[in-house]
Amino acid sequence: MEKTIDENKQGQSLVLEQKEGNNRKLFIESYGCAMNFSDSEIVASIMTEQGFNTTQKLEEADLVLVNTCSIRDKAEQTVRKRLEKYNAVKRDHNPKMKVGVLGCMAERLKTKFLEEEKIVDLVVGPDAYKDLPNLLAEVDEGRDAINVILSKEETYGDIAPVRLNTNGVTAFVSITRGCDNMCTFCVVPFTRGRERSRDPQSILEEINDLWNKGYKEITLLGQNVDSYLWYGGGLKKDFEKASDIQKATSVNFAKLLELCAKTQPKMRIRFSTSNPQDFTLDVIETMAKYHNICNHIHLPVQSGNNRVLKEMNRLHTREEYMTLIDNIREIIPNCAISQDMIVGFPTETDDEFKDTVSLMEYVKYDFGYMFTYSERPGTLAERKMEDDIPEPVKKQRLAEIVELQQEHSGYRTQQNLNTVVEVLIEKTSKKSDAHWSGRTPQNLVTVFPKENYKIGDLVNVKVNDCTTATLIGEAVGYSENN
Ligand code: SAH
Ligand code: F3S
Image 1 (cartoon, rainbow, N blue to C red):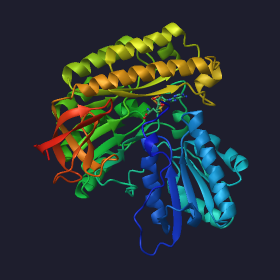
Image 2: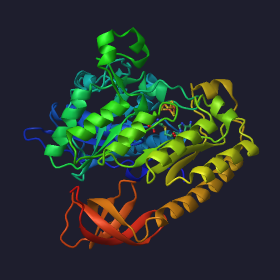
Image 3: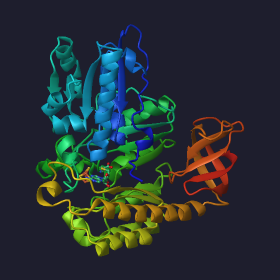
Image 4: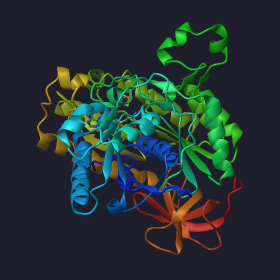
């Protein structure tokens, strides 16, 4: 199961509100993490002001923008294939079409993109989207254009995203950009730059605006949300130099969560992703205190072995992680916990891999995303370590933990049988027009007959049946939180 959180949505071309008077056509699609999908909404907002409306048809696009992912080699290969497709469409149907590459691959490959891929006219890194109008002017005059400058300040806090492909119920709100953690396998610190936090005021304004537009659930997004820290702007590493007033009025992640929960007491709040080394008890306590903060923590661990964790520069031990899990379970007994795991990291032995298996047995995660190690150019692991675990061994290890995770997911899902769960209705079930599909606070998909309920309702559902990943039931009334 080589799958990232949003791979089910990968590559969807996104629909944007049509603005009257706009006469150029934009085809925009996104690959990779939730942050990329969220960034595309910012880009769409900028492009709307430049006279573009979106189209779903490549054949009629004046401009194609593809928001790219570098996290694993496979993600990059997918984008390369898309470029071939654009090439064919341009050659056969649409010679005027221009192509721009956004996101992590743009940042990683820079001018190489213009050299290697003749189809590409425009290369824009994740911190340079506000420069799109200028870059586009260059392209319009027939020149290639590139801006891959990373910023220490840019958070796009002042841009109101255009919600793309929305169900009208759930939305992403980004709170930090970049990452300072430098896990040795990870390309993100190189492609997304230094970690910076967004002004809490602009986050709260965005949440209020979403509520007024009918949204019922938001996910606070960051590479590492737990290290959110606002003290009036500036990098986290410079916090020590801040004034006493700045320190006294600073907002950390627990405080931000609380502000969000209080600002819209009926808005469901989720967050992703947490890093165990930065996760603090006050976050769990805040979650326990506010009903509208969903009881689910995505807590990637990558490995259950201390030596491998150290080689990965994950700054916690197996034992510290287990204590964190114990604390979560004690303070929020019904909290779902999910994982990311990497198998086949350089030098990982069979015995060390078994520690990952035994950690999974200990936690019994509700769900997870598991990957074979993919060497990324420029990372510390690539520079210092040989990618020495044979592919078949990696695959075998992956298969083992994927199977184990399925068992655990099944176990966790079954715990809900014959209970009543609270479900936020998001859409019609894929399998049946007569059923709604929504999620519990624990992030479990639940389907049930529609009756008179509607999208956006918060409903109590009696669970009668389940598969490993889906609850099946019937509504027994509105939730008191509706
Ligand atoms: N903090 C981030 C993590 C980004 S990457 C977040 O917001 O999700 C998502 C996951 O991809 C990581 O947790 C890790 O399990 C996996 N990953 C990252 N680099 C990888 C690599 N080089 N090979 C395989 N998997 C990788
Ligand atoms: Fe990557 Fe580690 Fe940051 S996985 S995004 S460097 S927390």
